[in-house]
Image 1 (cartoon, rainbow, N blue to C red):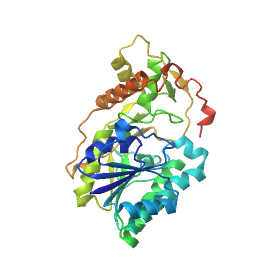
Image 2: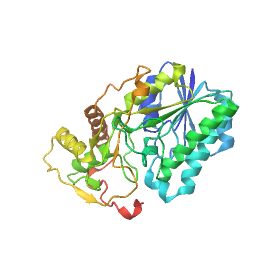
Image 3: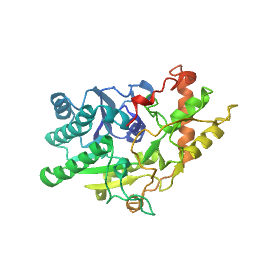
Image 4: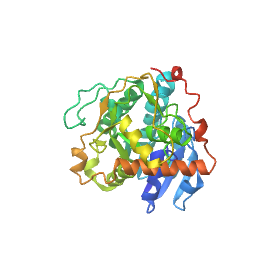
Length: 333
């Protein structure tokens, strides 16, 4: 197959590339939230286009040249805080950009688009005992609202234009190459880098929030399944583990793994957004297709930290200064 990945130099796309070694892969990315790195992206089967999904003409030109069989659409703004601060940009990137990708795919003769929705759409839902399920959706933040809107648009395109989509509600994905430069960084990176710099981890709220953490390799295993399993067409799936841990529990695992002479204490900051207290997945629908997550939260933490230590050793980040100028006024919702 020829496969286009939008946001292809981002976290999920970068980790997906090695799993697509038997296919021709075309990356589309504007490099605003990621960097083309030869050690990850310079492969014999990989081609790169620096382009923005908001640029309709350029996007259509790339698709008309490449003629993909399948599109993985990962591009967009992923920060809840950035989306809240600039709703116009969030809508242009996440909603209009996704429409552009759907249109470009269909215009080039490709009906198959697999895209990232978000578990954030469960923010205002009642939590069933087995975890949130795909029949639910009640977003609160502007970020989650844009993702829910894209899912509705995909369903409309399926009914009216023949799009064959799969919407994937990722829970908290972790692993190597995750962006640690975000306004508020992913938990594992934020905690590990602060401890490595001999600083207290920064926790927003009381640390009891609970999340379902899944390794990026398990998420990408399901992406590979979507390429050939027609049961995934025009369906929505949760991708999590069905388990959950609190922020404090995660911090303890990270602290133990680092095995450094730094006492585990915290800099506590106020809650900064409208996220749910506990979010975890009911993954029974994905498991019915034969998929199960194979890696533990410990695997995800250890792989993330090993990557970050490599970044430190390469001089790409100084952990002693990491998040030292955190200003909650910039991220408060």
